[in-house]
Image (cartoon, rainbow, N blue to C red; front, side, top):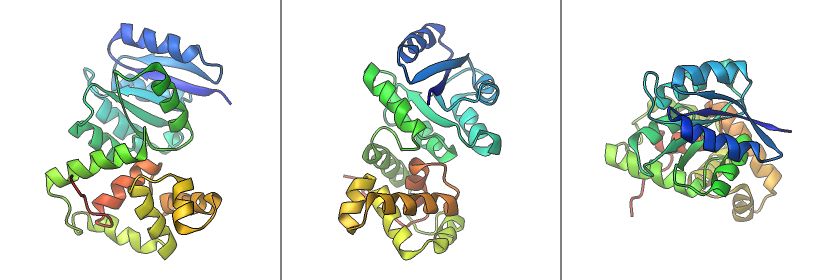
Length: 227
């Protein structure tokens, strides 16, 4: 299956470079380019994009607002957003993850990293490594003073819908472990872990693993630990 990629960046030169890179891969193609967030949302729907490479700072509707719009639209439930940023630790990045982005990637990343990010996002995983995303969220929440378990009582209450095993798996996901690693730790099969992850996402309204990490911290299930 070919991964349909949408490029959203206000710099035409950068979009051109991304297009050449993406179109050079046999398993993906660029289906559109947007110079602002509003156009990105429109094209994501019109072109049935699988992954949007979203610049976070654009004129008009920025990447953060566009990500929220995509995350709130049931018609775009299949769309995965990868935030492109020049800042590895950025408040807006975490807000984007909360809004439904699958993760973030620095604009200075190597071409192979960008292509891998697209494939990982299309597969429903968090970017780039779950541990990096988890670390970013933990630092940000700790800076906000949001480690208190009652910070988001609604999300904390929704945790009650999870089974004991699903909660256990969610803690492992928030710790940055892959399905294979979780399977080894809990002495179950990777397929069983995947089933628990999918059920937890459905019950908590998470689009992917990145949002599960956010929910685990915001609900108080996992507390931030800043090194």
